[in-house]
Every structure is written in structure tokens, then in C-alpha cells.
Length: 250
Image 1 (spheres, helix red, strand yellow):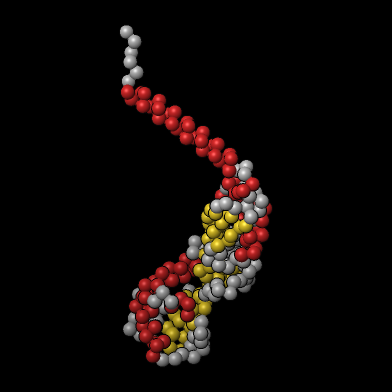
Image 2 (cartoon, rainbow, N blue to C red):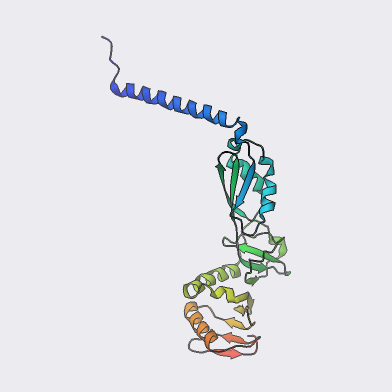
């Protein structure tokens, strides 16, 4: 007696045929789209960039003009920009029928850091060293004075340094009290193991010490709101319940 084909195997066969047909249709349509002159790229739109110049970014991908819109992949675009350290991510989209849109996400400087020999480099939130060929006018950042030799700096790689980590940690604590306070600091540097902060507007020095940072910051903000300090003055908040203001550096 011949076995009857079960219902489940019959459905599976129909499902498999449908998948093959859909895939075949997709391949056919995709092949058609990549050959039609209608979809040749006529313009490229660059968006999302803040520091990098639009014309500079557009010129890099001019080779895509007159190529078929549906033959260009994200991989093709990424390859064009792979050597630009400032680019963090790229989104590629096609605008029917003939426009390519490239959305740039930039790495932004969080701090500058100064090397042992005085060279300045931008540093992003992940401690990645950014190129210092151009300094952008909207990137006014506090400087961290380090003893890192220039020979140890590699553009595009993460820098590991105790002082830099301490300053990043301080920034988080400042944000809990006043996120804008960091903008009032122009420089961080070590003096006899003490971290010195330099006020950006007037130039007085601030020493917070190692503990109760948020409470000390509140005291400092109160002081700044109620009295003025001269350039070169040191505000020493290291000691509990004691404020020392002097005209000399500690």
C-alpha cells in the first residue's frame, strides 16, 4: 500500500517553493534596478557633520556620481572614509530615484591634553587621540597637562594615563552639581601630587583635594557667586571646614 503524503510535508514543500520564488523575484528586481540608467547617482547629500567640512566630505565620494544607486553598498562608502579619524559612524541611505545620502557621526573632543614637550592633542570621550592638524573653533576644551612623551602618541588609538582618568572622573562629579562648571576651567595639571584647576575667565587656581568633591564644588560655586578673585590667587579646598585663599601657588 502506498503511503499518503502527510499534510505537514505538503505545506513544507509549498513553503519552500514560495521562498525560492520570492528570492528569485528579489534577485531579478535587484538586478534590474542595478542596470537602469534611471538610478544613476546625480547628487550626494552629506549631513550630520559639525567640524568636518561638507565640501571635503563630498569630494571624497565624488566617484559615486553616475554609478547606479543600488550598486553602492555601505561597505563601499565606509572604505572611502576609513582613514578619517574624526568619523565615528556612517549611515547610508538611498533617496529615490538618484540621490545618495551619507549621514556622518563625528568623534568629538572632550579635552585637549598636552604632552611632555608641549604638543596639544584632542581626546574624545573614549580617550581616543584625535588628529591635531585642525583645531575647530567650536571645540574649546580644557587642557590636561601630562608628562606623556610624544613618541607614545598614536593618532586613532586610546591613551592610558592616570591623570587623564582622574580628570574624566572629576567631570562626572562636576556634572552631578553643575554640568556647565567644566566650561569655566581652562586647564588641569599636577603640582607636587596636587591636581590644580585653572579658572578660564580670570586665571585663579583651584585645589579640591581627593574627597567630597561634590560638596567642595558647591562651596566653590557659592564663593564665586559672592566674591571676586584675582588672577594668580589660589583657592585651597583640601581641608574640611577650612578655606585657604592665598596669592601663591601651593
